[in-house]
Amino acid sequence: MNLLFVDDNHACIETLVDIASGMGHTAAVAHDGAGCLALTSSKHFDSIFLDITLPDADGREICTAIRAAGPSSRARIIAMTGHSDFVASSGETSFDGFLLKPISLQALELFLLSR
Image (cartoon, rainbow, N blue to C red):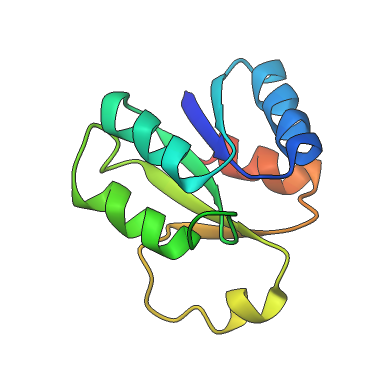
């Protein structure tokens, strides 16, 4: 699978990329909303793991923008957040799932194997 990990926490994202690569996936990285949109507007990703709280944007707005157009508009987009109240009160969103930080190896593997 072609994956995109979007998070401003460099240590977190490096770990996620290492795990995904170890499972045979191709992984790209963006550290902010602008970088994410630049990548998703020019490349197709099967799944996008998107932090909700980015330094330059709200992950929900980025998710909506990805869904609006581009080669990744049909990607499975997974929200990543450290706020358990966001997951409980998410209601109607464009996300296909949620991962609560800190993300466990088992949780990430489940998402990667379920597609």
